[in-house]
Image (cartoon, rainbow, N blue to C red):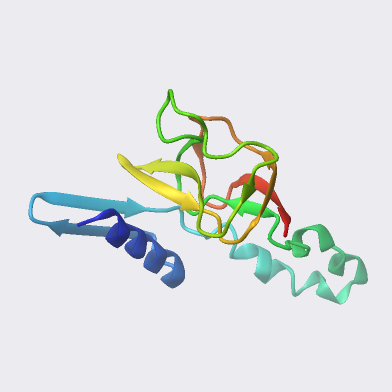
Length: 145
């Protein structure tokens, strides 16, 4: 079982709403668990009732998500660089290309390289090195290219 296979399983979990997955290959066993998105479910259910009111249609800041936030795809520990004594992958002001590694998230003793999903310039780093992060937590702000 390689890192790419684990990434694919994590992506399949995210796409299909699966919150727990266990896989065993030989002596290697992997268990992936992510927070259920039950918290997000009431929000859409609650929005239709007040949607008749015009003021409720105003949450443009959340809807304005033009891709400037890079969010954590999983629960884990955030690392800015490949090793404690190594330079960070990016700094504020760094220009990144699509597919470039921007950080590492450690989840269940596995190091997952997180890559940029598009090109841009890092404008803010929102978490500290070694900090635990939640699924969907904003890690970086990035300007559009």
